[in-house]
Image (cartoon, rainbow, N blue to C red):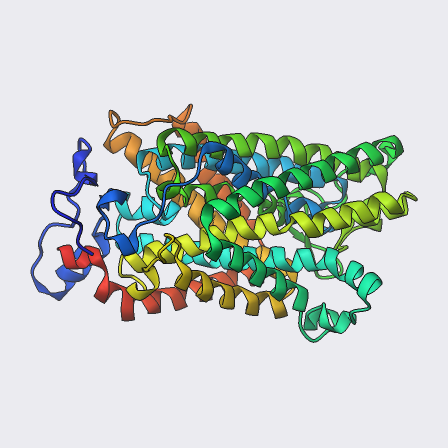
Length: 502
């Protein structure tokens, strides 16, 4: 990739005390390899990129807040609250609080880095600029894993609400609406909703963001209705015993890992989504202002929503009666004798859960796009259409996530997605602390308060949540990273733009 004459760049060498964009020249093969791994990306201003690699600036901060709320409030609270209750009992509320604090710290680090380096690519780009190519690939591969699995998991969660309605209203057999783990053939509703969202993104970023904002309102109203209907049935006895499985991860008699932290490691899935906002940097009208408002604003709103819904759910019905249900909130309302409210909630979920799919699908396609533009993936995937949308990478992403959604269970998808996210969140916090040390006087439109406290909470919290994930998830994640490194060494390291600039 070569920009036009006199390009404006964000170069790590401009920061006081910064290292050169490439490691010092060394002789021999080993020296060249080390130089490649340490190559640091220079960010070319979007207006100086070739037209086929340039994204259109069309999003304001209201679009970004709606994108964040749309991504965060979704499968986590509508579906995974049942999985979390099965692992922690009533203490799932504490699990939500712990996951929320760690995510909030990561969100503050994201806000600072996103305004310092207002370029698409999120944690992948920050790591590339601040640390180097090899670690950037690992983070980028983790983000690909995260977003692919999140889109698939939310599509499966959406299907959990849509399937009963489709069976009741249209007589569609359940064998075509559930994956093999539930005795079905393939989860066709999940594949269908992925195709619809892919079509929206291909139609246009601003158009899909505007529709997303409308659907976010539908979803929030549905959750308000749930709290209003469930609160009159609140019974404090449902919170006893509060933590039947203890705090730390432990194996229960039925072979399932349970505890407050085990639940937090899974429902952590419920809080992230703000990182998808960072991938919109090149499409934000005023990135220095809009990104920080979008990231921090969406997190504050969602923490308040989650705590209210979780308290109302646990208080209204004993957790054992909705644990592991694919539609726990609708189930709670039916058990309370409120079938009309349950149908309204389920219908609202069917209408509004695609906002989560849209936000993460958007983020996934942009991560793929930027990595392809950097040469680490085939550069032909980084071409945009006449309307400024990356159609090729969107179609490629749709095929990948549709296969995952059609055949893999929700809990497995969510757990493995969390592993990738925790890696990316920790990397962003590390980048923020490095830049605070390397370039303390660099311009920062948003500054994280108490950066060393916030950064260390994010890093150590993510590490503890990763430890609290199921052992098989940790093993699958390591296998996925080995596959990713093989792709990097066989393809990406030979064709990256940063290597060519050396």
